[in-house]
Length: 602
Image (cartoon, rainbow, N blue to C red; front, side, top):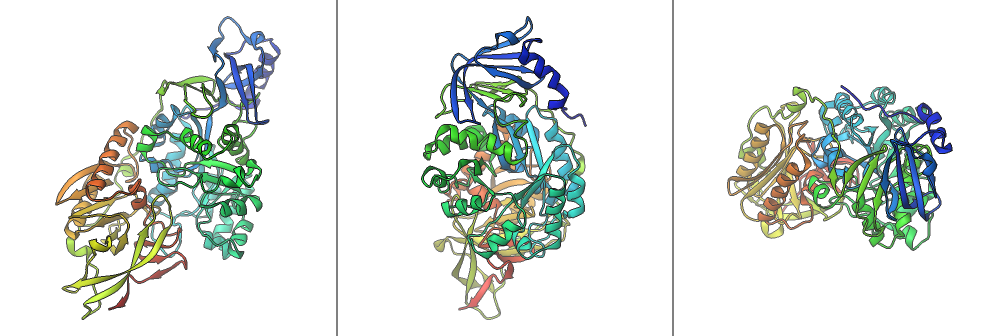
C-alpha cells in the first residue's frame, strides 16, 4: 500500500537555511498577511511566509529575497494567516467514514492535523484493523497521526469484543511510523486498581517516548482521580464542568475540551481560562465524535474554535488551543502547530478571526482547499473482503428474542432503566414501574420507556441481551438498530415493538452493517456501513444525506433529542456512568459490576 512520505526537517534543513538566507528560491511565498503568532499571542500585520519542500523557511516583513522565477505567489491581501487546525482527540469511525473520506470532509474546514484513536475498529478487527486505519491515514495529504488503542475490551469482564488488545500489541504498534501514542485509557478502574495489563501498556508507550491518552469518566475528584493521574495518562477529554478542568490541569494533565456532534463540554469548562484565569497552555480543543452530517453542514475544528470564541475566549487563545497547544502535547511543537521556521507549511487564510471563514487552506506547502472546495485527492486503502463481512448474527432474530421475561406470577415489576441525557455522554440510572403481560415485561410509552437490546454480531452466538431505556421520546410502532455500538460494536436495537426490533436487526445482518429505522413495519431510513459495520468509503456528502434521512426518521418516530443517534450508539459504552448494556447484561458503571434488569416485583 503506497503511503505518503513527508520529508523530515533533517531531510530539508539545508534548503530551509538557503531559502531563508536568500541563496535559493522558495517554492511558495504568501505575501502581505497578518501573521497570527500562536507562540507569542500576537497579530503582526504586513508579513510574508516563504516555503520550501513543504516546510516554512522564513516568516518576516519582506520575503522578496526568497522569490525566484518559479516561485508560486499567493497574495494574502491583508488577511489573517493562521496555523492549520489540529484535532487533539477524535475517532474517525464516528463520522461513519474511512480516513480518506473523513480527510476529504474536513480539509475544506481548515483541519490539517488529526490525532485519531481507532479503538472502534480494534474491537471488530483487532490489530489488523488498526493497521488498516493507520495505513490509509498515512496516504492522506494532511497529517493524520494514530494513537494505538488501549482498551479492547474497554472494561474486561463486562463485555465481549470481536478481538482483544494487549500489551504486546501496544509495544509492537509503537514501532509503526504513524503511531503517536496510546489511545484513551478508558479502563480507569483498572488503572486505579493497579491492573498489570493497563500499566504495562502505559509503560510500553512511555518507553517509546510517546503520549498516553486519558479517559477518566467519573465525577469523583478524590483519591480515585489522584490514583488515575498517578497512573500516567497525560490528558483527558471526559470532563464536563469547570471543576473537572481545573482538577486535571492542576495535576499536570492537558484538559481536552470537546465539541462534537453530541458533546457540548467547552462552554462549561472554558471558564477555567476566561474567568478563573488559568494558563491556557494546559487546554486543548477537540471533537471526540463528529457525525458526517456535522462535518458536511457545520464544520469540524473551525466549528469548535468559533464556539470557544462565542463562549468568551480570546480568538488567539482559542487558536492556541487548536494548534500549538495540541502539537506541544504530542511532542510535535517543532514540526507543526504554528507558523514558524521549520514547521510544516500548514496555513489558513481567513478574513476574520471571530467568524473564521476558511478561505484558503495550505497543507505541506500546497493549496488543498479554496472557499470550501477540496482541490486534492484523498487516496483510498484497498479494504479486504473480510473487513466488509463482519456482521455475523448466526441466525435471523424473531420477536421472541426481544422479550424480557418476568418472574413467575408477577403482574408488575420495578425495572432498572437507562436514562439518556441530551448532549452528554453519561446516562442516568433510572427505575420505572412496568406492567407484565403474558409473563413478559412491557415498555411504557406514557413513561417514555421503550426496549433496548444488544445483539451479538461478532461470533454468531445468537445472543441477545434485553433491557429498558428512557429519553428518546419514541411513539408508535418503531425500531432502530445500529452496528455502531461503542465500544464493543455489537448491534444496539431500540424500539417500542419487538417484531420491528427483529426486522431491524435482520436488515443490518443482510446488508453487512449500518443503521436502520423501521416505522409501522416498513424501513424508512438506512445508512450502509460495510467496512467493519462502522464506516462507508462513499463520499461524506452521500453518507451525510443518508444520515440526515436517519435523523428525520428518528424524528418521525417521536424523537426530538439533538443528535440522538450519537446517544443511541453510546448506550453500550460500559466505561461511562451510570447505566449501560453489554452482551453480558446490564452494567452499573458507578460500581463496574453487573446489575439486574428487574429490580423488584410489585
